[in-house]
Image (cartoon, rainbow, N blue to C red):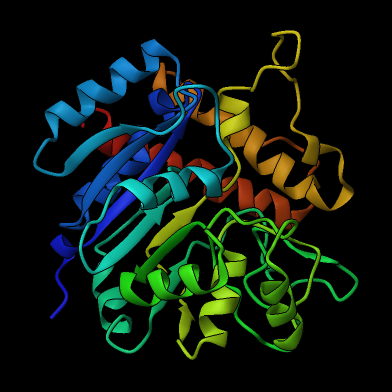
Length: 314
């Protein structure tokens, strides 16, 4: 029987976001008995101190603080690969985004699914309901959990892998969770083509998830009703620096028309978190929005207000 304690979730922290996003992890701690590893990836010293202090105060649940980027921030998937290479937590390899809130206990359903599947993923984002890869898209983005024919790519937001099948598939095909598509082995590229998934670019874990299924293992994506995932908020809480050391005002995806809903939700989320963290009331939902976006931002405001009020002293 799988227990919560058998699962160690790797949480990757970047920049200075911990100050604002720690409330999310507090909710995961409160509603599970799983353990967590804090993976620092391009985190400045003052933010590292906050992370270390939190880990120290929760040493029964936070197994360690692991720095995977002493020379600069790694892409998300590469940071996970760095953890995978140096840590073995037993039968499972797990990770969860730092902006996922648990409203109630959530792991029982995942543990049950792991009795039948090699991989279970979750983490639908607040900003969109569309998680199917567009037919004309040459790649698989992070938000694409499914293909046009129903094939399951899974999510890179929350994932639990049985480590044995993951070890075998990654070794067999020479891939990692951070493999983006270019520079694959010829036989790996041919295998993706044979499986009907020979796309150009792949977000975190997508290639591994395709090949795992091609090797005969099953993957289940389950959007847990008690999890709330914002998605993509880190840039607006701790902007990355440009080549001359200046803060980048917008991430590159903010210019894409299809990303407009994500831009609206994440920018509002950052404002809400800043105000609530500093003891102010959450800002009002902007006027003049379409009803769908107005409802999404209302959910964000209510969920975050509850989150910070519940875990301010965590």
